[in-house]
Image (cartoon, rainbow, N blue to C red):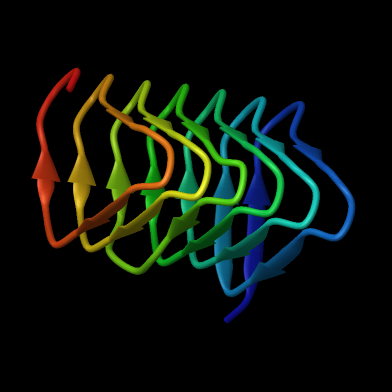
Length: 114
C-alpha cells in the first residue's frame, strides 16, 4: 500500500520521488531530486538535494546530504548530521552524532555525539 502522511509546513522541491509508505513530520524540507521509499522522517529534518532514503527512520532535527544514501535498516537518532556522499546501511547513528563526507557505515552502531 502506498501512502504519504505529512505534518505542517512541509516543503518538497521539484523532481522528488515518493514510493511506498512515507511519513513526514512537521517542518520537513526535501531538496530537489530526492527519492523517499518506505521512510519515517520526524520533525524539523532537512534532506538536501539528490539524497536517496529507503526503508529508514530519521529522528528530529537531523540533516542529510546532499547526495547521501540511507539503505534499508538505517536509523538516525535526533540531531544527527549525515554529510555529502555518505552511505549508511543497517546501522544506528546515535543522537547528535555526525557522519561526515565520503563515508560508508554498514552493519554498525554509532554512539551519542560522536
